[in-house]
Amino acid sequence: MKHRIFDYTRLAFWVGLIATMYVCVALIDISARNTTLRERADQLEEDTVRLETEIEILQAQITYFKTDEFQERLVREKLGLQAPGEQVVIVGRGDSELGAEANRKNETALLPETSHVDEWMTFLFGEAE
Image (cartoon, rainbow, N blue to C red; front, side, top):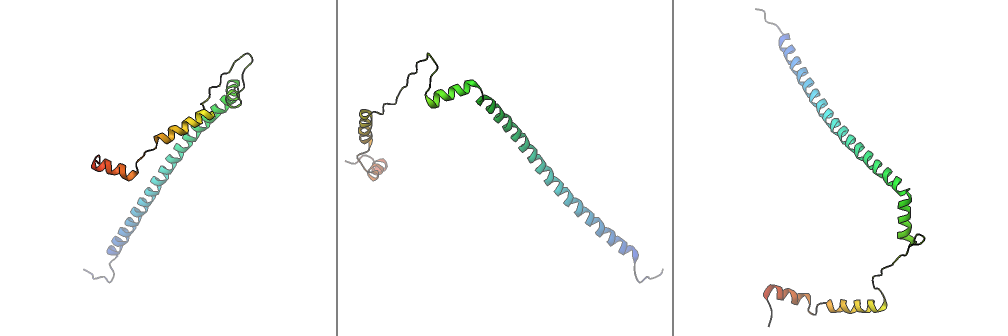
């Protein structure tokens, strides 16, 4: 058996092992990138569907806003106008001077006569005598 100075079989083994490891790492990196891109594409697809739905809803609203029914309702609500031959009854909240005075009296009657500290003491320790 000849004794060689340099063994090519060992060198080929190590070069092959290193090349195989490099290819495996590269494939793992490409797979990770592919997964990230797929997730991003799915997210964009969901956003596209959501935006298309919103566009359809807005187009339906625009169509409704252009109808005579909506415009008549808007004029009645905002401007208080009425159709010919129609009688409108406006119901107020009772904010006249007498009503406002009564509301102020009711508000002062609802205020507690004791302080918050006294209320907490009563709550925690019961009724004080």
